[in-house]
Image (tube, rainbow over all chains, first blue to last red; front, side, top):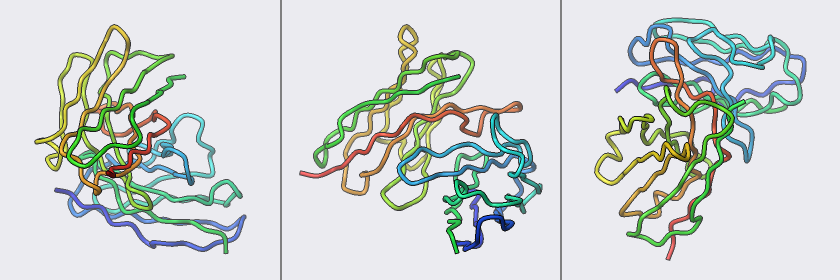
Length: 104
Length: 120
């Protein structure tokens, strides 16, 4: 079973700052990696699929990169609505433990 | 755009069976796999299994022995039954659509979630 690890567990930043979130897989997943955003009381929302493709309606400030075992989600300039938990997910349908982006 | 609306009992007794239904509207039901995913309070996401319109299914090995997925194509609905419940099964349960160009693996549309509490 492929295990995903995410770092850091918590990222404390201010609006306007750049956020860089990491996801590492225990084995290669090629470019098959998705990212989700989840706010309290809401279902997760797909942000990125196939490592770097933005889902429909996702703002350009969200970008994904990486392949193989190491992936990055970047939020170029944090908006107030971006403070949330972010999960990565691989084709075996397992998710990483999440990174919480909170307000510094 | 595709909408998923789910419902079912929110309080279930230990050892009994959880039963949830998810209706798909404003989009095609065929040609996709439809998944159930759960999230215990304050914890991460766990995939339970998926089923296609034709009834083909895949399960998380952790649930194989006690999960049943079904579809009603006449109503564009999918259902989840999870038996032998314990307190550890208390969670928010989501239905979601599986998508992917090469093969379906990511979840692009989600239901609103149903909180299920297992308690006597």
